Amino acid sequence: MKQHDRYVLAEIRKGNVYPFQNIFQQHYPMLCNFAERYVLDINIAEDLVQDLFVKLWENRETIIITTGIKSYLFQSVRNLCLNYLKHDKVHKKFEEHSKHVYSDNFYSDALEEEELAFIIHQAIQNLPPKCREIFEKSRFEEKSHDEISAEMGITKKTINNQLWKALKLVRDHLADNEIIMILFSIAGHNLLF
Image (cartoon, rainbow, N blue to C red; front, side, top):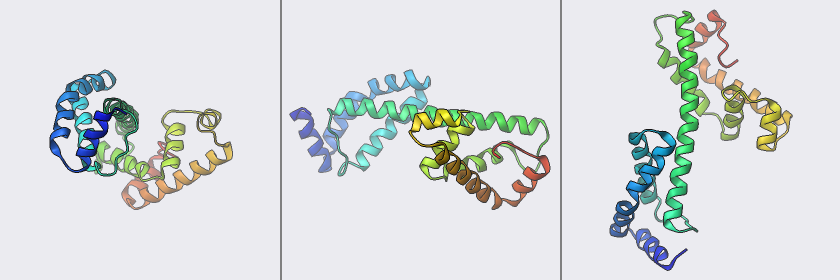
């Protein structure tokens, strides 16, 4: 890391807002353009970049940057974009399933399709990270156990155990919403199970 970057980071860690503002003004437009190439929406790109700077300021005392500031910012924006796209893909899958469920009258008018999708999404987001990753790869990316095993370097038995755990935790979460469980059982709904 360059001496100048070390100095700027030291000042930011002390709470000096001026070097932070300089970094923001210098890199914000380029980072937004960079993010837009991934997410294809300037508003989303700007939100992601702004979130990065907010987190950077909030964590200024503990953040560790080993590369230069510019490299760190671009790598962080890239990671934020990839995470956004991953979650957006899962969200779109939910919307597709919800539309299918709604069009086939699988549940009553009491529940809107967005409510059901939100509750299921919330249940999945509450899974432990490794469990959620395996579940999403299996259910939403439609990857086989062999593909998941090769990708994550884990055994098929571990995958089976994690999927069983995920389904149990999602069912438990849905059980708290009795109306949803009744509708799932009446409809024979097979979105997750």
